[in-house]
Image: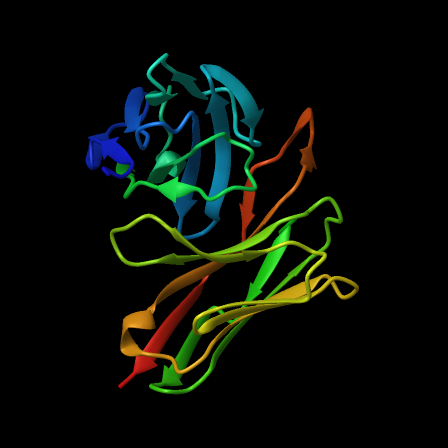
Length: 114
Length: 118
């Protein structure tokens, strides 16, 4: 069974640009959540989608957005990139998205903002 | 404000020894406490989790101890092996309010970099 797939693996952007990251959950999983990982702040929750609806949102500015498609694949978008957005962005999926169930993480997309 | 405080930041243990990582929290809305293990270049993977109505949970060499009144929990790795060398994160799930809303996702500690020396 394939795991959570995130593309691309690495991205380099410049300040002011926007970026879209993609996540394909494990087959059958309907919940996708996103996390930002930085050396300074650690792992921080961005948002969660379930059945194409954002169900939960962390304390991040509106420049961070996401969506989920009918096949459960998810994308997150960051507009007007800032240097501080450089991070590893992790996607996690779960079956029913109760959040107390097991989350399966992908290997992440490493975003560098220059 | 750091919702989940984890210590130590780094830990070196001899092979066969016991590795102990501690976490503390304040938010009484937290009702589920998982531990994650992360290897370089990989995403975190769930190790073991506990609910606050249980004081201890053991899975193989990994044990979580939970003290609800002290709002503390810890991970013990028995008979630590070089393959256990990784970064470990404690986490908690429950509503965390913030200005303008609240989030019910995983709140992670800052992580412990564990090295098991052969």
